[in-house]
Image 1 (cartoon, rainbow, N blue to C red):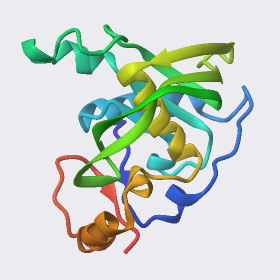
Image 2 (tube, rainbow, N blue to C red; image 1 turned 180 degrees about the horizontal axis):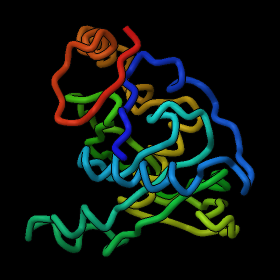
Image 3 (spheres, helix red, strand yellow; image 1 turned 30 degrees about the vertical axis):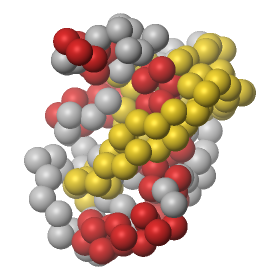
Length: 192
């Protein structure tokens, strides 16, 4: 089932999410719904707070980026062919490498894209959908998507990385999103 994505302004996007246990009610259904929601809205990552659940769960699929690359983009990123993963109770253990810019967007903040600088590599500890624990290093676009989704479970948004003047210039658009004055081709929930 496709879930509505909560829009900028909803308090759930600013909460630090809580860990869950393996017996979290309806986890498999929630994950299935999150995958369906992410793909139907053409996203590459989705965090539980974006579907109004304040729990430490997010999904990513960086494979899509590599499958849809233009010829001149091939071979630029070292994490090709990408990954499709579930992250539960994730913790960043270490960020390392050169910070680099990439034009990021967010399903909860539609129609706004900005360059965000993030470290190249992330070392993560997380559980998968079967609650098997992993410690794994990710780089490139996969690392970036993970860091973006991880921010969601920490109550942060990509616009928090922007310089104050840039954020001020975007404030009118952000206010419009908060009020539901934005057209998207996926289901959204506005706090108004």
